[in-house]
Length: 157
Image (cartoon, rainbow, N blue to C red):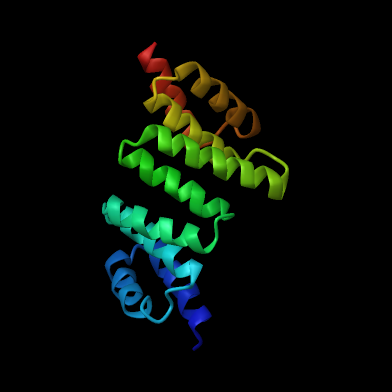
């Protein structure tokens, strides 16, 4: 089995919930794969799910050093910064992810817009958040994250 296969397998294991096992395997292979963007991105995901946000932030920053044009890494960084309460930095990161996404796909990704709305709620910029949620729900009226944020906004009013 080559290393690409092991990274793919680790992603599968992560989504199956085997966080500690993936974390342990990553710690063993990261020394020989220091310049592998996917390893750092995966490590960041694992650390975030293990509630180790500072370590997740360090890992995603390393991933961004290796690939500064990764929409996924900027998106993940925004989620981590949001968890850490660094809302303005989180907003800057999600805006970068949206900018990259627009260059690649030429449309506004609803998942990115929902994350941005979540950050805006934390910044007490509720009207802007509400506009983004409406945009997401126009595309998918059943989006669970957007519906949850809509309810939070309605409960505050």
